[in-house]
Length: 188
Image 1 (cartoon, helix red, strand yellow):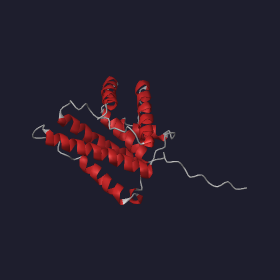
Image 2 (cartoon, rainbow, N blue to C red):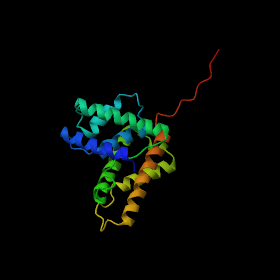
Image 3 (cartoon, rainbow, N blue to C red):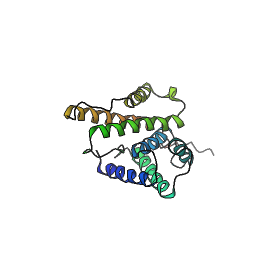
Image 4 (cartoon, rainbow, N blue to C red):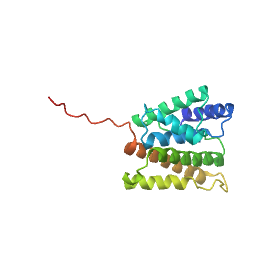
């Protein structure tokens, strides 16, 4: 996974703890991804209201944290629109697998919450995306206790991680506002 994402995870964890927030960095990233992939435009200020409603009991974020969340929103939006370097905000690969799996489950649940707030018409989604949303929902219920931390468990984690990335990308392609609008012919 991406070092830049890991460093941001650590920084967000510290920032959230500093402001006594009871959410995780994975949840913050998941909600942001869900809002964007559900169709929230980058320049639509309502995303902050949705974010605050989902993760901060409708309260405004402290200035320092609000700035960091705004930067993360812009970064995620750019990664998705450019179709490059999109990574989930997760703990370092050196962290225990149970901790990483817990963060993945939190990310998936937060993604679904953000996506659901914005996208009320999932029935208009392709069957592939509908199935992917079901898969993401299933990931929120994966058992957090592995009998052992071995190569097979690590491989399973990476498969789930990549599946979440694919799901977010697919949702953005179908519902994201980053797609260029077709130009209308000029009437003379």
